[in-house]
Image (tube, rainbow, N blue to C red):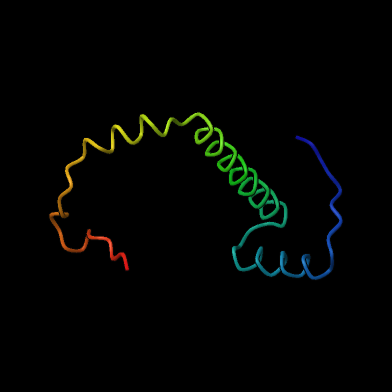
Amino acid sequence: MSQYALRLPNSLMEAARRLAKEEDASMNQLFVTAIAEKISALDTVNLLHERARRSDMIKYQSILDLVPNTLPIHEDDQLDIR
């Protein structure tokens, strides 16, 4: 396992202490979880951009054209487009 000395503004450190206490977690656990969540979010954005880059709008539209133009079975499933 690696170590890294982290310098935080006082306001962030106070907030981290408060959250760690509320979550009944250690500061280390809070920081590791926060970093993991941020990495996951950025990786997801990158994945979606890559998939969008590989997309084919002509194929997409040809598949969408196969879907019947009918109202949803359940009223709650209708889009309210105004």
